Image (cartoon, rainbow, N blue to C red; front, side, top):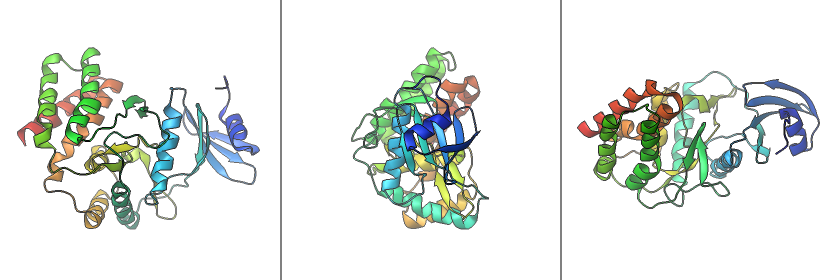
Length: 287
């Protein structure tokens, strides 16, 4: 890692191209113009393994040849350089195509639940939060042990959830084999598929960015699309279901799959998300 290196300098070093301009998009993300007029996005992250995990995830999703993801131009342990997506308005036509492509991505599969992308570290991230990828053959037990319970313990330790409240989530984990629905093979997941990571371009295509890619249950990506809303969600889901029908009762399991990202939000942002996490846990038990 080069101390105090700016995004533009990192882009020049990693791509071997001259840099003609740069524009900050956020604290960690910069739009950089390379010689010849090519625009790229340069993202910096000093968390150990974070850039390697994201780069590996983007390449793994791209290898499926289904959903569109920005091409990885270059990366090292601190910096990631990808092509820029020129955004445009959402459209129903793009949503229909996205639903089909997402179904095909999931069907391209993964070696196991929790399997990291090839070349990706076991210790990865979902947004700003650590996320460990430990392969397992059984989804309910893996989801409980590697996704829900670690964040439940952190939320309790931080005081964002009271120990008495945590029992309802623990009960969900105990009953996961019964609540999870029919067994499915491991799917190739984006892993952090909330609306902010879904970009609509000027040519009416959908692109996915910032993956927390791993092998998982395909209903998890769909539950994430529901969590904070997504334009034309009904078209996405209808098209997905036509391409790859979902198991009966999948809509009743949305909250079950949202439990992990909600607990991540409890840990990152505090008590404000605790009641939502408890509500979906209670609903899962009652269902």
